[in-house]
Length: 103
Image (cartoon, rainbow, N blue to C red; front, side, top):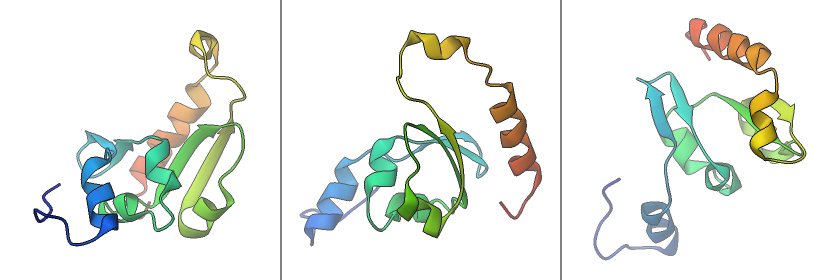
């Protein structure tokens, strides 16, 4: 993301140094990280036009659910064992959301 040099605000400096979600499918599917949802104003997600967030976390982000349509999969511990989870329901849900142009 291009920002003025020097940055005119602390928020601008933080945004310029943080990682935006990676675009997996043009304007439809992004892979984000915790930094993207910890921002109080969700500026990165809103800039990308993201409307639905699927998150695999120990608990829901209540504030996130006020701003976006959210789908939460509860995952207590992240480890290599995550690979053995049945992710097909999540994959099906992602396909359904991508088919709905409004989401």
